[in-house]
Image (cartoon, rainbow, N blue to C red; front, top):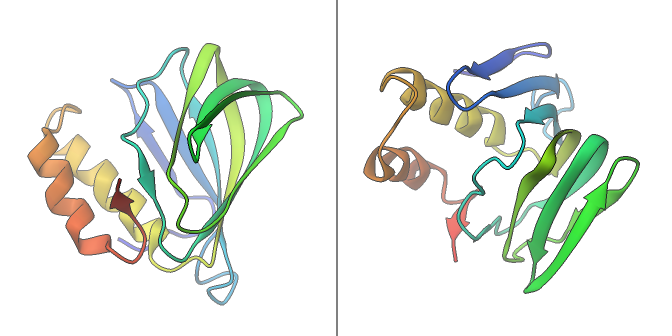
Length: 147
């Protein structure tokens, strides 16, 4: 699935929401931007990196904890976090939950990856196994790799 501007991906079990603000198609591949909502203390993703993409996060409400290149920090509402390409990182919402804007530059197929991860969750009663997620992610080695 290729997302359009305005596409929403909601995971009712995890309590997450992703809204596409800008897509690969709408920016001629320059970047992808989403607005995400994570509930309080959401489980973090595994430590990972994006080989050729940088990320920029702007926290709108709540706060996140982040580990970037081995350094842990808290980013509260109004704060920003930059993650350079090929840098190990992970982040998660604090006890307040979080709403943030998230820009990935260049876009590559990151939007499609988010859609495919959402689809595998939906198709597995919102509880995909690690192997199911891995099967999706192996199709996106230019966008994502585990550390």
